[in-house]
Image 1 (tube, rainbow, N blue to C red):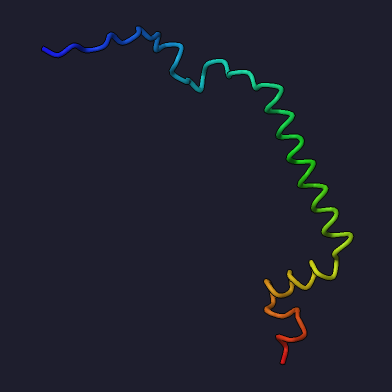
Image 2 (cartoon, one colour; image 1 turned 60 degrees about the horizontal axis):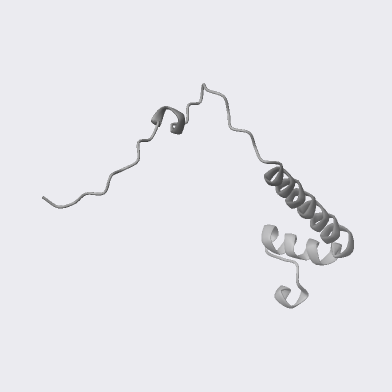
Length: 74
């Protein structure tokens, strides 16, 4: 018979996730990362809508109505 490595004993009651049990705490680092990502998306959205309004409108018209650039109108 071949030598089999000994497996560690695991307490499976602590490893299995239960929707009725207490939820694990979120790390402050993860929360800060999410907040930073949302702020970045907000700033990029503000920048695109305020500084590049005509370019954004042209892209939106091209995607929604099929028009927006003069060279495509023929």
